[in-house]
Length: 239
Image (cartoon, rainbow, N blue to C red; front, top):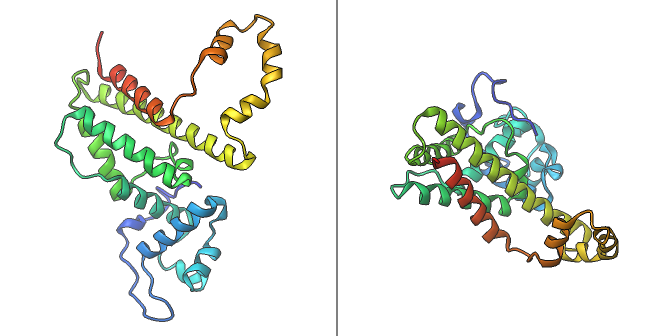
């Protein structure tokens, strides 16, 4: 899953497309990325290989290497295609509304392409659409009242990304677990009810007991929005 930034003399986004050939199948990096995304959406990154992708496209595996030098470059193209969906055009609205819109679009894109979450949080994504999304977010945060200089902006971006990546990965992990086990979180918790009741009856976990007894089953999107607002208040405010 590692990306190839720094290992190639010319990044894939700056290399010209190979000369098109009509036979046996016309190809482009956009077509390759779109097909790879469809396969990854269905079976995850573990189900994506150059050989399977070539078969899906109706070409020999070696022909794909005219367009991408390795699997890492393929992932780079796929990731940047998702950032294109997220959108990186300049937004002229209030800074908070812009940041909220970008983060919510990122969450929706990750829920639609769960493999995308597996590639968040490693090396920075530097494709043209990823950079556009990054510019929109950074420019908006730089206008926040509590962000006075570049150090503040770097810390604010770091905190925002840490929340966003952690929250998205947690939500997708739960979705995957529910599919793999055939039970959602509530059903899983109910199955552990007798054990949990015995442990809580010991009196050693009073706060956990309150959460179990009285805590509501929170809506994922509403919780994401509320927590995101809290993070923004924290990283852009001053005591």
